[in-house]
Length: 112
Image (cartoon, rainbow, N blue to C red; front, side):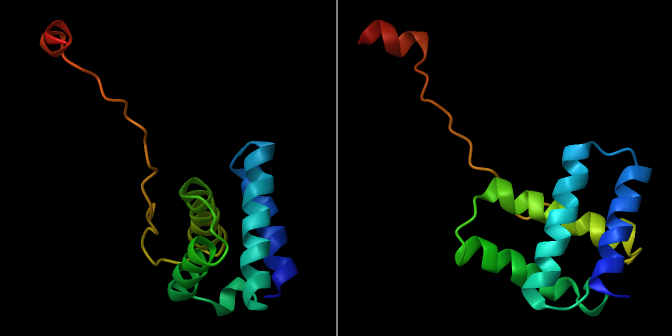
């Protein structure tokens, strides 16, 4: 299967599943960028290639963890749904860093 045929299948399955237009576009773009990075169709790549690609995005291109998780979701869709690969679930790889402000207890406030 060629890269173009795979991308057409991504479009088809995204519409069939009723994904939003934005999600359809994102998944298509992520699949295209992944295949273009290796210059091979996704059918010739495996989970190690996916992990290496995500590592490249994180370390070389300095993409945020939220964006990495978007790439991961798009590639999970590509392999698990479009190509029907039974590799198990590629799980969310990174936790988003969450800012948690310091909140003082009422006892602490009254002593200040």
